[in-house]
Length: 183
Image (cartoon, rainbow, N blue to C red; front, side):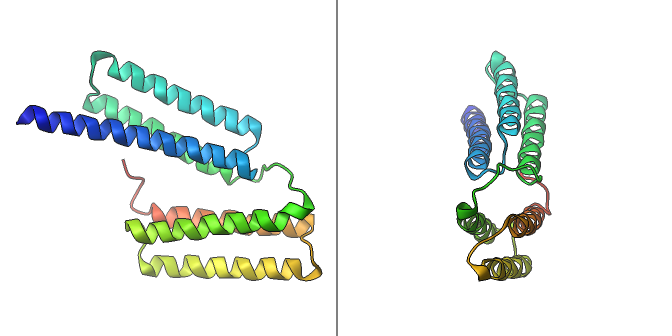
């Protein structure tokens, strides 16, 4: 009986590790495609993912990951997750053509609303936490509407909107992780 539990636990740990690595790689790819990561930032983040995979390989050299190794790998993944978040939310971005600014803002807003809904679904956000976050999204939509009043979003308006989005994204992240980042 004990061997089955150990095997199931070991499988769950491998799956959890792989899932987290996949999620982090997807976040980096999304940052590249939406312009929130420069190529230099993305290269550094991908290098960190390779280091984590290498560390896992070393930990698995004896066929299993012990508690100390698991803790070290989780710390590496948490650090990488934080780095991805910070790099995607700093002010360095690829320039966006004027005709793409509106759809870029819309894409980010859709992503933020989805993160709020996911938080409600997985229990990392309560309805009380989600309310102010959704209110922030409404204010962003209103700000975009004002910026588009003349039919276009100029560079200054775009910068202001992106700053508001970064602040909203940080609020969502903090609310979803106020109990800490899960293992």
